[in-house]
Length: 383
Image (cartoon, rainbow, N blue to C red; front, side):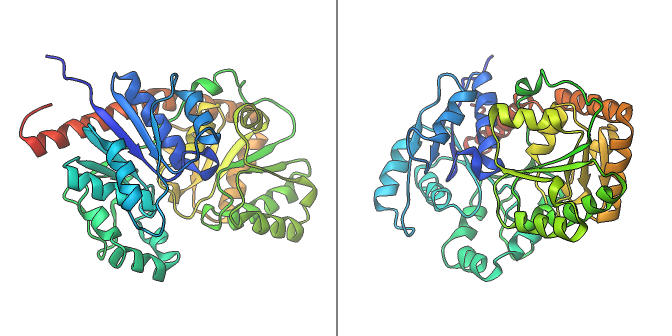
């Protein structure tokens, strides 16, 4: 007997892709879940008609209903009414992020109305992330109610086993599930394999110190000393990392080979992947990098740090997984740039891995299986 479709509501503060990975995860999950026949709705704080709606429309046609909710100072009087309306009739809510006020308030409405919710912290609960702005986050957990947001989730949606090592002082729900991120492969279908020409190292993501910008800057300095033509293209919104890269470029003498175009989308982002010889993410802590998946979908070899928690890259021989140290990163990049046949082979294997395991359709099915099992546990019957 076929099971009835679910009404699924995703909640996050921003769906504008300029705000990093979570918006791409939410839209990817929504597209995959809708393709499986489910009713998907969205709640965020983005103003109507802006970049968020354009991004959603690019991947979901027609766009699903989206409620705009803008909580102020954690006072839920008007916000609660909007959330109640947006969550009306939901079978399950998928809440994203730990710290957005809209996520916290949505969890309270879910609990009051008996709607089970999955909480996806997107890397916000591991020790490295909690160590940033430590006093403020302790206030958030224990005085503003975020500990309850975590504790009362029907399940915690984590991205890798390392993320499951939540610090002892953080309450956790009884159920923890690991479901990785996925990727839309179609935008990268026509990108040709790595060719000859000037070597280009591509970084794509938030230019944040936690992404290993200092490691990247010094690693490229070592590489640039060996190869006078190689270039570094660092794409993404600046969150303190651009100054780190510029300082490294001055120190190592490659300022004329560093490009910092800011965030790129659509055709411009595809063009950056076309230029790239190799993708590099020497992050110090990472959940599950969508940019790495996009690079693999674009048939580009990847050099990532061990802290990216993606050992499948090495197992599939799609790139190199190395310590977040400049010498190790520089050596891996140099080997790939010097051997373009190797680069093309690594890129082809990366694309095959993505197609086999990381399309949004297969990732979405894992979340739907989780939702149904949660509802079975809650009601005692399969629905």
